[in-house]
Image (cartoon, rainbow, N blue to C red; front, side, top):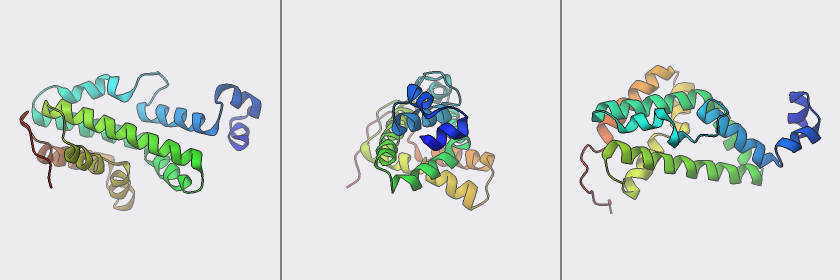
Length: 173
């Protein structure tokens, strides 16, 4: 917190007046980076997320890919730093777990918007893995893809993998 305060040009006490702990500060940074502004409105309550539930199947999956790409363009570097820092800091590790659980819930909500029904546990888990920031980093940073290439690929992958029907599906064994 001392280093953050120094970088921001404020007293440590000032930083603590706004953020009671490193974890609270980290959550605020993550939340702001994910949504792209400081309005206290969750991703799942924003118009970009609602767009995932409108139009034909391909339009819904394209909206999901567009939203993912915009979020990861803002957060990919932060996600990598947090993942690395979590190994040596319990507060950061706790926040990483909480962030991943929020991501998983958002993926389940998005899948429901696309499919018109609740996703099974297996569907949610698979989509959560597919849409992870780690995959974005692998393709964009490691493989040299542009964010637009990632978005197009993700839209196509989601189009193929997310079921169209609103019928029920069995869990894989």
